[in-house]
Image (cartoon, one colour):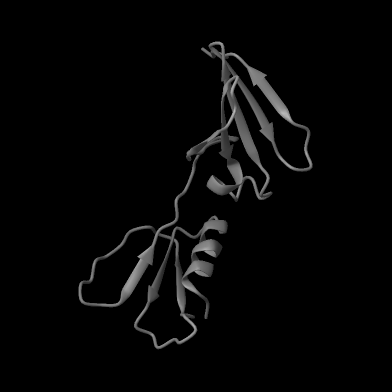
Length: 132
């Protein structure tokens, strides 16, 4: 037995889990349920039942690279447009440390990126690199 949130988190961290299913009609005062971990993400609609399926967001993996998306947070800075991108929040399986973030600074038509991951050296870059 586990909570729906714990089931979602465990599924998101398990590569073979593509979705979970829970019967919320199960009598549970502590909101603990039998959680079914599925290796498929298809959902069959059954109106009038209390079965619920949850499909976690997955990130596209391309070889040794991954595509992630999320919201940028505008930071207060008078001299440049500065944004933070919380890597841990949008991809905790790739960035398990809560302080993991990208800082993007746009100043005088130049974009600078600083990647901060606790326990690792900061990575920074400027400009645009075009690959053919």
